[in-house]
Length: 443
Ligand SMILES: NC(=O)c1ccc[n+]([C@@H]2O[C@H](COP(=O)([O-])OP(=O)(O)OC[C@H]3O[C@@H](n4cnc5c(N)ncnc54)[C@H](O)[C@@H]3O)[C@@H](O)[C@H]2O)c1
Image (cartoon, rainbow, N blue to C red):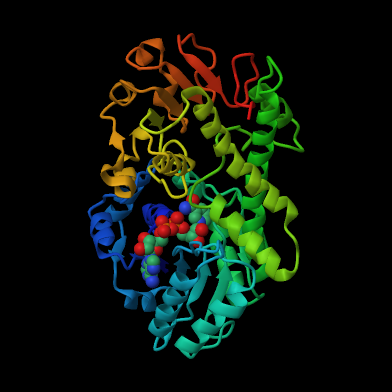
């Protein structure tokens, strides 16, 4: 069996690497020629733990990386993993996936194979039936369900654990019609992931499952962030003990209950916005989803207003941001809350210095010479009037009072509570910790 994967980003390259390392015949296709060249040389275009090792393994076997779309005609299973970003209104932008589907349709037109196309990209309900299916049928001159299979197969991997999640998904969702193609795909996944439950449903439910998943995760984060604000008003209260305890209740679950400066990343913010837009189109007022977003936006404002209260006018103040990636163990800064914070500081003419163990190159691509880049954590902190820990990198957990000695004014805002038990000899403020000195709540 030949497998094609269209779009070699976080989702596509993880899948390509895992399947090829297992010995499947895989061709990974991307429009970006430079990206293809790097990947062919065994270099991942982004940092993801274990990805390069898995990719190299695949390249030793039968993996091919190409920017030539015509190769899809030889593939039995074709996974589509191109981006579905948001447009300026927050709605989903389908232009990339539409283009990919047109090319795909054209390239399977003359083929005698009964291709099965699986869409992993996140798309709002109705997209598969109303947009993707007609594009494929029109461009291939073939009939879905008879000449080729079309299946929704939403992806749930998390960056930083993408390889593990691809190897061992907690669930496989297959949306579409009950056809011979669905049967084949079910068999494929049963063999590939014997321990994962397989949910077979229709296209629109599969599409909605992905949004339900991400909006629930965002809701958990905003919930704990709101509680963390309340905790800050209760001297001695600690949001982590609360999260840990309620997380032990199996009805709640412990994950995604880490209070912080708000959720970011390439999926939660965009999927929340797309779902809110979609809900409005259906005539439903998304009051809860709006509140989740609102809490998220205000969380960052809390941090800024604390800095303002402590430093006064922000113009020309030297502030250090530790961590620009949206989470640890990735170099992805798409919709990172730290990047948002830097933008807001730059509007207020703050002199920003940043440090990140992995994401500096991506950060430089956004801010160029508008900010400073610390060569080390010490270099980033030296001379600073305020240090803000944004991303929970392991390196920052090891900081001690010696690291803050060279600061101009010793003030640390710990958005992740990773230094809460240390004696730092600084003015220390932590999200979610209520004490007399912690004034995060005083607006
Ligand atoms: N990143 C995540 O953690 C994650 C998790 C689950 C689901 N998703 C969803 O999966 C999809 C892909 O996400 P991603 O983060 O991997 O995207 P990405 O932007 O990192 O990668 C997309 C890739 O597709 C390529 N591409 C664009 N048009 C193409 C075309 N016509 N033919 C071939 N390649 C093309 C791009 O060059 C790019 O390399 C999105 O819909 C996203 O919402 C992402």
